[in-house]
Image (tube, rainbow, N blue to C red; front, side, top):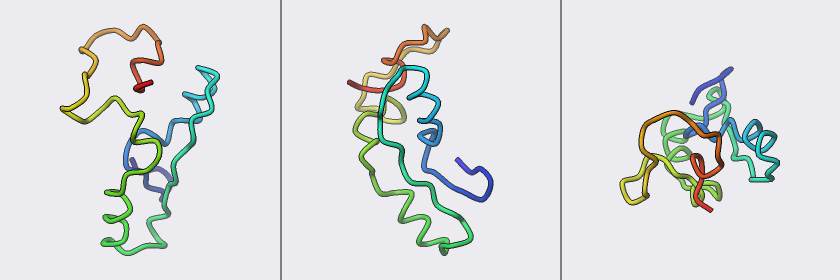
Length: 81
């Protein structure tokens, strides 16, 4: 995810909105300014797991992913508790 010269490995950049909607306090992950790091440094940063990764319900075949369909606006659609 790239927004205003800041990069984040996935949609975790929207945790602020998730926390507000579900009244949660999940830690937000760092975002990195693309002009402060080399390409190799950014690649290394993007590939490192962070504390939020353990709660993610997307992108991994080892998780029981949610079937495609309409959202029920439930937390379980976004994270593993």
